[in-house]
Length: 526
Ligand SMILES: *[C@@H]1O[C@H](CO)[C@@H](O)[C@H](O)[C@H]1NC(C)=O
Ligand SMILES: *[C@@H]1O[C@H](CO)[C@@H](O)[C@H](O)[C@H]1NC(C)=O
Ligand SMILES: *[C@@H]1O[C@H](CO)[C@@H](O)[C@H](O)[C@H]1NC(C)=O
Ligand SMILES: *[C@@H]1O[C@H](CO)[C@@H](O)[C@H](O)[C@H]1NC(C)=O
Ligand SMILES: *[C@@H]1O[C@H](CO)[C@@H](O)[C@H](O)[C@H]1NC(C)=O
Image 1: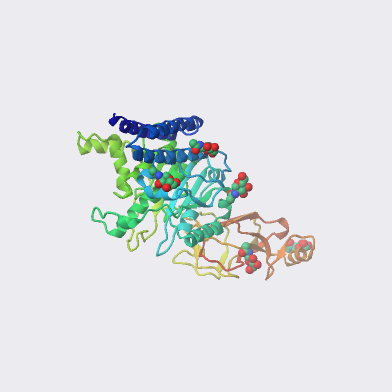
Image 2 (image 1 turned 135 degrees about the vertical axis):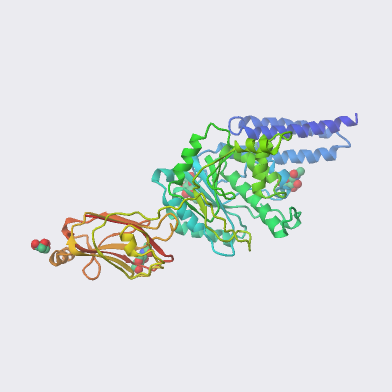
């Protein structure tokens, strides 16, 4: 008789675990049925509590745990139910009751799992979600360049079918907000469209890192760094799990290969019927690892379970081991089995460019040998012209070489009044022009606030155009007329009949720039 209540408690505890995991595995369809089940368990436990004399203390702790869990499960099922694309303001904690087992400190604050969404429109249903964890670095930050590179080669339909989540893995709100501001200032359009999200963890997310065991010969700082990385990657994966079909993780210091989006999507679709756990689009660390979002809860839970024990790349390998290796067979057999769960794509689609690791003091100069050199300019046959510029170019990246289709032009930080001038020794008829600035590796180095101006060779026609009040032409200096400007790094247009033939074309920088400028394509169509 003494044993009975104790066994009852064990059974109930087991029952509530099973039922909570069961709710987790079938979010959405079975959701509404779940609360009554839990309710019933509640009632039975209350009843049991009345019966159990000696064990009532254990019982009430189980009961409390059950209450906590049912609360979590209830909260999350309702979060699951809200599938509307504009579900942006009511961010719910993640669907992970088990996380409390591995991170007990989270229980102390009900909001410890609520993400702090700085920018975001709750975009869902995309093919690819890209997650980029970023931390404060003592040295240079590459985040804006990384994002510029990712966005540079996207078509408009790809822009609609992608979500990029930047996870600022810091709790200092000044720092976190400064990253939000930087991203809003540099990528306003992408933020407004919902393509780009910026999120950080609750200030209660991280445990006290001071009591970690130093294992595998890692220093205290390194153990803390790798433990936090496990927690960061898990958070990001859980945040991204219900946003799209595939999840790709990058680092905050990479450049992308042009066309990376369609290469990844095509490869994933082709391999869809195979049992892979992840696809590798880079051979370095955690860069360019693609998972199915439906596998993310399992992967994140595994990381969380062992977050104090090992670095994340080892844990990822251990998942493969657990899944397919037979301890009674040898290493070769195991490696063969594991190889089936990961497919490598070549050439690599992302290159690591940072020099400094996020672990202070560590140099991270690894380069992916399978990342092919890409052409960073577009060549065209252009009419003969005399070229000049007030801007100094960097290394061999001269205006002449750009115009001849051999290179891009890379100018040191432009200031107001800087220009690029193309003069045609004999006036020519020009039907259209295209100037593209930036390229996929220096995506941020664009021409901003820059006008395109034309000098018509017929002085009297020019004069007439400018004094005619009905004309929409705006006069610049030295007889030039403004016909266009750079938008998002590109200036493109036609030249009207009234301005033909043309003696010169000119780009004029209207205000000081913060960054260098790349001109990667010039096309003068005659
Ligand atoms: C349940 O949650 C409360 C606060 O919400 C906390 O104080 C308590 O320790 C939790 N109990 C268990 C057993 O997790
Ligand atoms: C679950 O949530 C709903 C509202 O969101 C609430 O009315 C209900 O009481 C909750 N159930 C439990 C068991 O907490
Ligand atoms: C959240 O969604 C509502 C529409 O449901 C919209 O009016 C609002 O601007 C959105 N807020 C943000 C921060 O995106
Ligand atoms: C120059 O423009 C004027 C006025 O539009 C026109 O009358 C004249 O023929 C033009 N001259 C040449 C050489 O095209
Ligand atoms: C462009 O430059 C002009 C002249 O310096 C300035 O008045 C204007 O505010 C600038 N526009 C932008 C968008 O920076």
